[in-house]
Image (cartoon, rainbow, N blue to C red; front, side):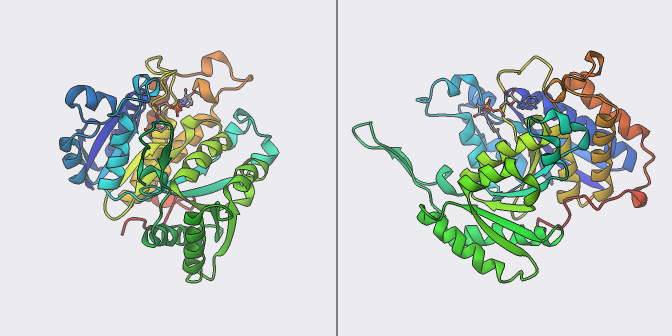
Length: 378
Ligand code: NAD
């Protein structure tokens, strides 16, 4: 298979982790006989420094011509420390999502048994958790009208949803639930917010087209509590942009670290794959970022954008085996981890590549049951 992939490293640890993701793509191409052609594009702080624009047209043009995009993260302390700066890295991220029509963000919360001890939640509560989040990505307060009143002391961000935006992501969530445990939990704040009342009514309506899927509605505050009280009670979680942003960071604690969670942003044609974490200024340049979220994002790309399920499974199996052998990055090490088992970013990437080389790869024998499945890009 021949595919064109745009790599968008972005800022901070984005550069460090996408380098490792690409290493894994190269190995997969070599083993399975594919041809992946790469192009690189800028976004975020680096793009602002170079062009004054957080998402230059040139980057967008490259992305529109690609078969898939591997993204790192954006963000820089300069902007975090000065909210008055008008041009900001995150604007590039929001524009990219909107321009590419990436309205559905899939965030699988996959817990590797080897990391049960890395979480601050009790292992007996965590074991067996398997959640697939559908976070709406191009609506809500992030895209609604925002501003300040003339006095400067009043600010607003409009929380807004239109019916079609809710319908299209609800269909995707119900379709995914059919390939899993057939349960959708829709998260909103319908007791207070009008946009949530529309959200709930539309999801309820769409649900009638999927009578084999159980639908439940939960308020965001209750969902936040239940997520750590009983994560196993969730299968597919469907929610808006803001609630999804917050809930999935909380859910990263189920997987042990932000450095373990991958995501896929999909819509009509192209797919974008990225870790859920940000540019992590606190560890940038130290070589200690966990690259597994980026590597697992590569697995999602192979599965969802290219339909290469055996290849995706090979990557997930390589991660699993590496963890089973006790290898860790600092964020997922625990008190029992020996010092010589803690790897830096680059060495963790190399370990995964070595695992891939060592696997007896018989594509038909690989168990693809745990793959994200279903064709999300139509
Ligand atoms: P963050 O996700 O960057 O980091 C949160 C914490 O998790 C930090 O302590 C960090 O060290 C740790 N962490 C994150 N990824 C890790 C990894 N791969 N390995 C080990 N530890 C990891 O969130 P933040 O600190 O709130 O934000 C930093 C910057 O990132 C901000 O400028 C923010 O706007 C931006 N941001 C960007 C995105 C994105 O590009 N999609 C998402 C979230 C935040």
